[in-house]
Length: 96
Image (cartoon, rainbow, N blue to C red; front, side):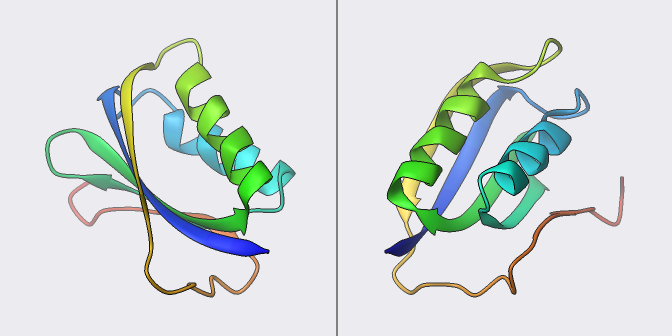
């Protein structure tokens, strides 16, 4: 059964390739959704997949990459399932 989750990732997470790391792992896990930079140098991840796959993605986010230093992943369920049309993408902010 699929569920949708919102995650706010904080720490040294912007400008270090973490969004690409998240996207790559989400695609491997067949998770659909988006990752976008948020105010305060955080990343927001909206993801939809199986509970097991989402747990694996969360583990990969905490592991990060060599340049990132994830301090926290605040996780909250989304009330309604969101259809991301089978893809996971990075949303670039206009000012980046």
